[in-house]
Image (cartoon, rainbow, N blue to C red; front, side, top):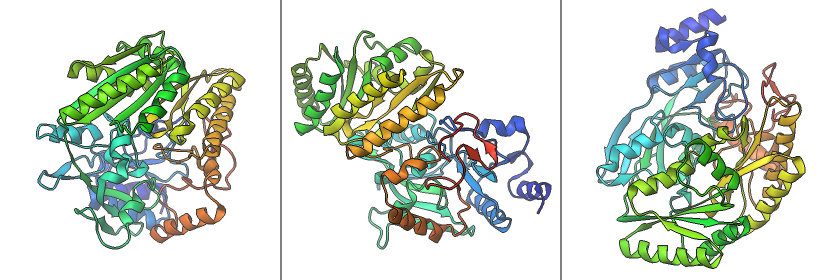
Length: 478
């Protein structure tokens, strides 16, 4: 089938206005939150699972790749159409289909924005726990694809801990349910396999998610340090003392400078680091925990320990943390965010190593991360216009990821592998491990049409995206 005939068939399925082919229309889909770009050939926006199924069946008959896309906030190139084909946006599948507070579940379509789900149930005293920093923009479907986390992962876990079942479109176009509405469905955990599969096994068109009951009280503490290492020791001491905060976040001086230069919230600009710690529970527990936390921070040399006195003050402190990535534009023309993990006890070592990398490569690195679970987010600041700058940034990033693995950690905590890190997945898994994963993939998608060139190493030449040069990261992942 020729291109024009294909476009005509797609329009029959979703309607003329929901098939985009002109450059001025598809260019907005060429990139996600990463620095990798590839121009889509065709963008299709179905309205429901039936239309998704019909598009997948058509793509199967014509042997065309299908790349699912949520809100485009992913940070590993997972929504970039590396091998062309059909980019299938799920933005129109944006309905909350059911809310069952008695059973504490909701059934949602993948295009529902994460924060909108919490807003829908907040008046009844409930919330949806996974809360990535892009919570106000990212979609539940994208969170499912990448098994996203967020600042409150320490207490509540990542997306897989809150998804009970998914409706998915398989490579044949068949629509099936995996999991269900109860916590423990019998048999293999096929729902668990889909969460975090980055769109390589099928396309999620509905999800059953847990809702959490809001806690009686929430206390938020900001601790200010004049040196970075005492702040890191404080993180280790807090968890070693048996305190499990709802969130335990750290921002270094570079990040504080970015936030206060972009959208100031009152972080002290002369601080080397700040810790943002939150506890939840009954009033007595929260008050006791805040007292213990204040003592641990002070014992480690915190020059100031500030406890939010109102909900407005608490939200302002969190506004700075959740806006940290976006604030980097206030201090550098470009930034590249990484996502590695180490055991909490190895945080002092990895942060010293990040500092050494910064000095050795002559680049600034702004650190903001989920310190409580050892999930690092070094933001490497640079200027793409300078010759050779991007290559140095990529090399520095690779060194940090290798060090994370050497310290017993991982190359990703929540951003996924996508295009960006597939060359490094061999640091974690043997050839036999990867082949076993590939067999699982082929069981669901025998011809690897869903989101090809993601997750696993491929023999393609560096920087190639289906015959075109990856326009920003020339010479890295593919």
